[in-house]
Length: 135
Image 1 (cartoon, rainbow, N blue to C red):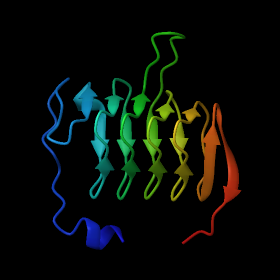
Image 2 (cartoon, rainbow, N blue to C red):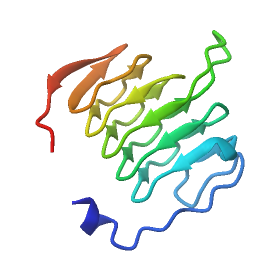
Image 3 (cartoon, rainbow, N blue to C red):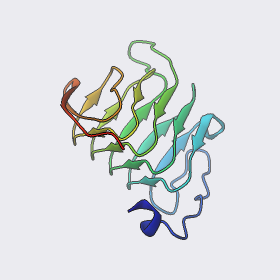
């Protein structure tokens, strides 16, 4: 599906603290590693101060927040969204979290712990609810 959908995918221009042409924003751009064929929804915010790696074929819904640093509790850590994972709209990913390959995070989820590969996870806090067949 991603092959057909992103036949002519091009990396968007990402400027510090400015909306991309798709209306999402990154702070600390130098800490972002963006894989090919990614789809990031409008009004998503990414703070990459302590690294954010978004691998190939990842989909992120609109209005999501991804933090590699929390100013509330001082937690810091790299965030990794592994290949082909999907993040539902309005979800929050906290510092130090890895979302596994092919996993799906439901909309409005609060992810403060790693999510393994090949699961559907959701909730506040997000927890795996269903195992998916691996590819």
